Structures are given as structure tokens and as C-alpha cells.
Length: 594
Image 1 (cartoon, rainbow, N blue to C red):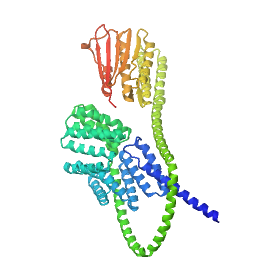
Image 2 (image 1 turned 30 degrees about the horizontal axis):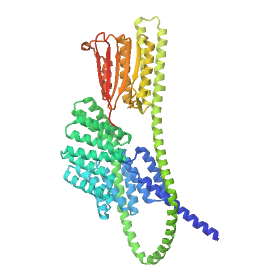
Image 3 (image 1 turned 120 degrees about the horizontal axis):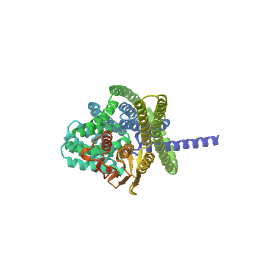
Image 4 (image 1 turned 120 degrees about the vertical axis):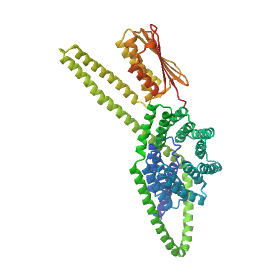
């Protein structure tokens, strides 16, 4: 019997230590800042959903509420408004039912901020509720963020003086707390207000200060926001051409972080900028991008569902308040009888907790490193899982293009060859027409293969591009033995990479130039030179053919397509020639600064 008692006590202590370790791990994962994380939002969603399950298994209320809040934040970045509200309300229930007032105050403010674009009246209602709770409890870690967010609501309503007042109050608390991660938000908010007041230079200075801190702490979402905001300042100044590069820097970061609201807004700003520059094609292109996001985000059904969730939540709150009042009356009746029991129970509990605390502390010191490694492993696995999903989708699409469309085009070529044999008695014009269709289909297959090659890559390196061009030249030699081909790549900057869109456009321009040279130039030599430095990538294609008179050049579809491709990747296409002295085609692309 004595041995059994000792074993039971040991088992209880072990359970206590294990639970404390698991709680610490749950808190460490919940403490991950969504804005500063290097993971994409779908990877973070996997991490926090797994963390929610772990907290629910322990019935750890604070961990459950924080996990709900983080999941809601992620859905906010992904523009899932209904799910954002749903998970925020779940978190509020947990915080209020368990008297976690700082967490509840913070989340009410966050809910108000998240609804600013959808329903300003409800946004101010939640913001005021959170601000009141934070001021009553003097929760400074909540007040600095809530003051800043409340200033945003005032700014959106054109109340710039009120906005500056709250921004400055928030900044004062951030500086008092020495909270580095909070400084970029205060600086960006002040910059926005100054920009609307017409103080553009001061606005840009604050945005650059915010971006510098965000680069230090690797806040990728914040960096994307700052690029868009700097572009907005130039738009307010009436300088759309200077605004566009900042919007274009914001988009790939926002896309990589899956920050859909920012992508939608930046597409809208790009459309407006090109509209002001009277570049209607580009303006329409980005407006269509913006419209797709807007339609997916702002559906009427989603708005109705959010309103229904809020009504359900407020009804539940009123019912809970009645139940709490009844419980308080019953509690007062029992309070006197409980006092003595509480005293003895508390003394015994204090002794047990003291022993448990000592054991937890001694064992926890040995487990901290292990917990940290487990957390890092979980995050790494989530990142790998996301990358694998993306790669599978890319391979599936390219495989479908290659297997389905490629095989169908090949079948067309075979059918045309058979048809040519079957109609051998037909006229020469029919045979030539069949041969032309067969040749066009063969060209289409080659272009499809080039497209699949580009789709299979997230980016195309300079070496990949050179190898692809060499393969193109090999085919050209087979059909044109009279021309000597040469390709040269300088040793510097061989690690340069292009996006898949840039790579395929550069390749198509070179391909079209080679084809034109073979068809029309009667050249003995054709040389392709690729070079780059820190600011410019350049391709030069020279031949010693018959040349042409630039003044009488008949611009066809091929040349127009080359110029359009160059414009699509923000490059310049230069063509020069003279009769009997050959031709030169140069593609010059400025390299964006990372």
C-alpha cells in the first residue's frame, strides 16, 4: 500500500511538469508575430491550427484564445472576412469567460481595426470598447496599439487633427516601453496623416524610417505596406510615374506573403497611376486585377454572415451577463461558509504548488532547448508542406499542357501528313496549304514546350536562359548551314535571376530576332552577347547580312510583338541597320534594386 501511494504521488508530479512544458510551448508558438514571420500565411495557419489542438487537449484557456486570435489575423491577411470575424468572436468568448481582460481589450481594438473598410460604425464601437477596457486597466502594451489603430479610423473619416492626436499618444507609449516592433506602426501612421495634410517630404521621411526598422526585424508584410504608402505620397503629389516603381516593389512581397487586401489596394493604385499617365492598356490590366480581388473579398453573402455572427455574439453576451449576475448573488450566500475551507485548502494547495513549482523549475531548465527545437521543427515542416503543395500544382499544370495539348497538336501533324498523302492528286495550292498548317502546328508545339519550361520554374537564371538559347541555335544550325552562330555571356553576375514572365519574354525576343535573320538577312555570321552589371542587363544580337533601310521599314506583327514584350518587362528595344552592313537588335532592361 505504501509503495502504491508513493507511485501515485510521483505520477501526479510528472503530469504537472509535462503540462507546464506543453503550456510553455503553446505560449511560445502563439507569441509568433504574424507580421514579422518569414512564413507565408498558409504555413502559419497550419502552425496555429495545430497549436489550437494542443491547447484544447490541455483545456488551456489562454492558449486557446490566443490561437483563435492568431488564426483570425491570418484570415484577415487572406481577405477571409467572415472567418476573421468568426475566430475573433471565439477568442473574445474565451478571454471574457476566463477574466483575461488585457487580451480581451486588445482583441476588441483589433476587431474594430479589422472592420474599418467594411463597417466604420461597428469598427468604432469595438474600438471604443477595447480602448475603455485598456484605459481602465492601464494596459500599456494594449494602449499603444489601440491608440494608433483608433487614429487610423479618424484618418479614414478625414479627422486629421484627431488622428495625429491619437498617433502621438500611441508613439509616446511605444517609446516609453522601448518597444521596437511598435515604432514602424507609429511612424507609418504619422506619415499617412502628414501626407494627407500636404507635407509630402515629412511623410516620406517617416515612411522610410518605418521601412528601415521593418527591414531590421524582417517584417515583410510591413515592408510591402511601406512601399505602397510611399507610392501613395507620390500620387498625392501628382507624380504617378514616380509612384509606379514603389507599387511594383510592393506587389511581389505582398503576393509572397499572401497579403490579399494589400494586393487588391495596390492593383487599384497602379490602375489609377497608369490612368493618369494615359496608358489605358496598363490601367485596364491592373483595374481587372483589382476587380477580381474586390469581387472575391466584398461579397454580399459574406457581409450578411458577418452581421449574423455579431448578432449571435451580442445576444450570447447579454444572456451570459444575466447568468453572471445570478451567480454573483448565489456566491455571496456561500461566501461566509467557504472562508474557512478556503484558508485550509489554500494552505495545502500552496504547499503542493510550491513543491510542484520547484520540480517544474528544475526540470524545465533541461527541457527548454528541446522545446525550442521542437517548435522550430514544426514551423519548418509547415514551410516544407506549403512548398510541396505549390510545386505539385505547378507540375500538374505543366504536365497537363505537355501531355494533353502537346499530344493533340502532334496528332494534328500526323493527320495532316496522312491527308497530304491521301490528296496527292489535289492541286498544288491545297498541298501548300496543308504543309503550311503542319509547319504552323510544329511551331506551336515548340512554343508550348518553351512555355512549359518557364512554368516549371519559379525563376529563370541567366545560365538557364543561355542554355535555352543554345538549344534554339542548335535547331537553327540544322535548318541553315550557311550562317555561323555564336553566343557569349560575360563572367560577371551569372547568378542573376529573372521571374518566369521576364525570362520567357527575353527568350521570345531573341527567338524572333534569330528567325528574322534566318528568313531575310542572308547573313554569314550572327552573334548574341549577354552582359549585365549592377543596374542593367543587356542583350545584343548582331548579323552581317544585307540589312535594311530604317526609313522604309515595314513594321510587321513580329516586330510589334517584340516591342510589346519588351514593354511588358519594362525594357527598351533598339533596332539599327543599314543596307549592306548588317543589323543590330539591342534589349536593355534595368535591374530593380533589392
